[in-house]
Image (tube, rainbow, N blue to C red):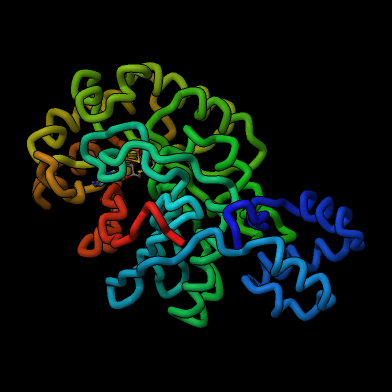
Length: 361
Ligand code: SAH
Ligand code: SF4
């Protein structure tokens, strides 16, 4: 398999129909192949016995269902959380985290290898951007997670939720990311409901406007992390481009046009953004004269190596939450999975890889 091999996960059904036509095959072969890929979750053309042998052989020779090379997995939470480290064809590294629960399975998917946004509290942000992922590289993470979920628990035969909260900023790779969303949603294929997908953004205003115009009503989470511009700019350089007021204007426009509730994520850093006064300021921002249809997700910061920051104590987290609740802001504390294997929010940096990146294959 060469890097130039056609990645089938980059194709939607229409693309596969074109491929089959080019190969002199009837269009229904594309639907069979698509079903094998996204309903049966097969990754081996040889096993697709509803396809003729010659076609299976050609698929094996000229296409790939393995753009992600699994290098390493780590498990925690009694095996219910799995972090996978994948090498891409060019040696770039991404991580994917599967969280299995008794009745559902959520996968946290990466959209870029690294990230250019440089948030000071985030391990991925310290890497810089290696490159955008293709739609197929994004989709294949969810397909891998579905297979893995059924290995963990046969009653869970696929993932039920996809959150785009892994490495990278989805709105900085909008077109490819959105193609992945549409492919995962396709009722003829992976068939994941739009409401079962959530995108988290650092706050790229043009992306918020674009999402408001999309047909699929996926959930939107916005990383806020501070209620004043000076602090937010110090934590998140993107705030120098889009001030909090701009971000909230875009959020208001999004809510007005979609009538959907948004989530704000707020990472709690001891002594930086977690005082009761700062909680009050946040409440004023969100509930002031023109209250936003929103929910706040508090995330006690997950430590990353070398960052001069501290995780808020449980007591401070609860006090912060109480201020918000008293002010009428719906607010929950995110229960984290996989902290000890660096699989929790913002800890993804491929630090456990032992690859020779110059020669990954
Ligand atoms: N780039 C997007 C999505 C990926 S990060 C974004 O920033 O929203 C997903 C979430 O994890 C974001 O809310 C991010 O701010 C948060 N996060 C990053 N580093 C973290 C850390 N070390 N501890 C807890 N949450 C973190
Ligand atoms: Fe990038 Fe999100 Fe990490 Fe910021 S928090 S550096 S936007 S992945």
